[in-house]
Image (tube, rainbow, N blue to C red):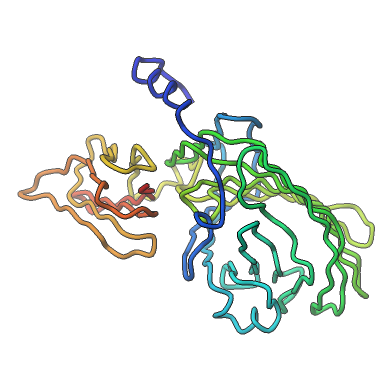
Length: 339
């Protein structure tokens, strides 16, 4: 990323020292029932970024290969959760086999169970939930958790043993695709877990890097490096990434011809926002909630073009979608966080 060290840029760089490091806790980072998270996905990534305080996380090189929609629900709405994972109070799911059962408490986020293609259609209930994230979590927070659980899956009775270690090892400016967040905390969670059943012994060694903002209950980026071995055989390693916001690293040929891009700034915001539409002939600006409800609209009159300036000072804090429509009918949508 090229930087021009003008006076304005110098002011921005100096102002970064005034940004407080984030704290992730139950009050600000627990999803609400029915909340949807649209995530871009990739099967590869290069680097998880630097460690330390007030660093730059630049992930412009991520290339989207797909996307998935996840929803968070109160576990009470699921008969499967009530019957099979009684300690869970939230679940996250893509609507299929990829479902995680969580127990959100004041002292941490616990993984109480799961359902995945490896585990089968029945939810796996962990008799000893593992600590995925310690609350409150800020730069330098560490934790360990020993895993010793039993569960029943389609493979029958099984035992799970292993260790979990976590550390919040970095925080700073986060840039990805069209989004820019000033204060993001990175948390590294390492697991070495072995499942033993009558059919097989499965070992998973996983490093996961979560990037959390105080404004989002879901990680804005998740990087996973996992190695799996069966019955002591050679490990098979995979990498995956999930992230919010736009499709990072798209080529010109991948851009939808019926859409156009713009970059709201600042983002997050609590007042005036410049949508940076350039010379685009924008006729409509709409602001919608994360679930698609229209909350504000501005239309150009007499064939004029809108300026692309938005005032969000009267908006409630939360995540919104800003949708622009040009004179030729093309549309562009970006997420905007209101503080």
